[in-house]
Amino acid sequence: MLKTTYEKNMNSNLFQKSNYNYFVKREEGLVGYNARTGVLALLSEETGRILQEDKDKAITASDIGETNLCELTNMGFLHNGNEVEQILSKFNKVKDKKETLNFTILPTMLCNFSCDYCFQGGHEDGKSMSLETQQSTLIFIRSAMAAYKKITCTWFGGEPLIAKKTVLDMSHQIKSMADERGLEIYIDIVTNAILLTPKTAKELANAGVKQAQVSFDALIFKNSKKRGVLDVAGHPSLILKNLIEARKYLDIRIRVNVSTENSNDVSKIVEVLSQNGFKDNYYIARIHNHQNEFQVGIDSPKQTENTCGATGCNSCSSTSSEVPACATLSRSDYARFEHNFFLNHPEALQRVVQKLVPKSHFCSATLGSMFVIDPEGYVSRCWHSAGSPAESIGNVHDLAEAAISSKVSRDWDEFSPLAYPSCRGCKVLPLCMGGCSHPRMFMETTKPPCESIKYQVQFCVDTLGRIIATTPEQ
Image 1 (cartoon, rainbow, N blue to C red):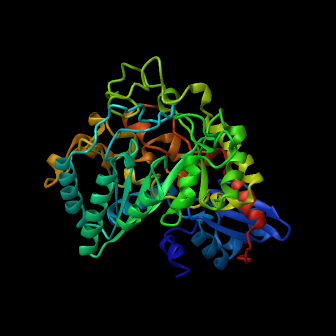
Image 2 (cartoon, rainbow, N blue to C red):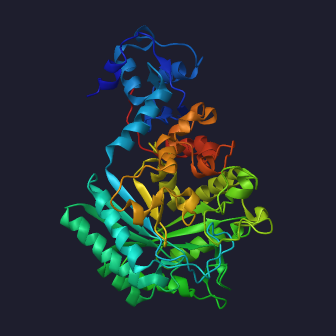
Image 3 (cartoon, rainbow, N blue to C red):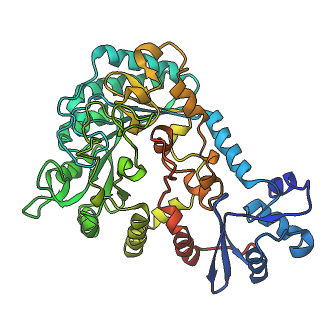
């Protein structure tokens, strides 16, 4: 087993140093990390010296010995071939594997909140899913299940609990369809939790829903635009109180949205969450503004009805945007914020570990196994496209018993981040796989949507390399 990769590459005696190597010094030697394979290994001083010097110099068995050459190749520090092509091969193989089918269903675009950064904008007059569309959606899901082993279903919106009956009824039916076919199924819901009463949480659990994801973006809950963890009196807010009760029935995952407006309060928000038993349930994420960031022009030939992907949304007009540009942290500024946050919150170490796990795809949109279905039945491959017919691959009323063959679908199937020079030559490519593909698919951006890992990979390697228990490999 050890020699598999090495033996495959023995068509030449010359081995190259990987473009994805990183190093951190330790008292007992040098820890090496390879972003393509995800391997961390303690290297001897001599091996470390050879790997770090003259990156373009080829290595042979006479330089480091046959055994070391074999092990370093299997770990990814050396290679004999084209690393980018190896990453592309993995990208394509995972697409062909068809292991997990992912559905996101929006039963309504209505929402009882009006967050100024929501990429779907305001939908006070939004539509809800009709019984006819519900049935066509179930037929579409049943048809798509045949080729997969697992299925995930996420309820999204708008606020999905405004259409609670639809969520409960369809969850029961989707779970029954999966059980009939012996498929593993996981159902969750993204909600603002205002309506997540103990009764509703129990009903969701009985319908097969396993987890609720809820976002906070403020310390104090003052109005319908900011979701705070505390009320004005300093007690747990309605949302937090609902989560405390709901965890009796559901797993709770909490996302803390970060912007310039709340960055100074994030540690306090996390402290309140920890005090209420959610220390291991949260993660932080950057609020983004695709329109401003990628500078989409109003005369772009690919611009759809609403750039943010929401029917009836005015948030992308010239007088409004997803979130004020001044409130959005740049990607590099957010990376620095995240860096400092990790340093001050040891419990977030697991997130550092996750950042160094190689990906095959950034998300399921490019896998071909994710379908986002809006209240009118339009099917998209990306959450950002929900509610935008021009970005859909079709409608469940037409696709329920027919193959998907639209141009948008073909464009998604042909999409690859490796087609972009900025990604092909990037040292963190295996860790982000090009970032969010929506700006490149529909917004004609020439600016790479780089993830924060690009700016903090060495910090992550340094952090783990200094504390992780290692076994000498060389």
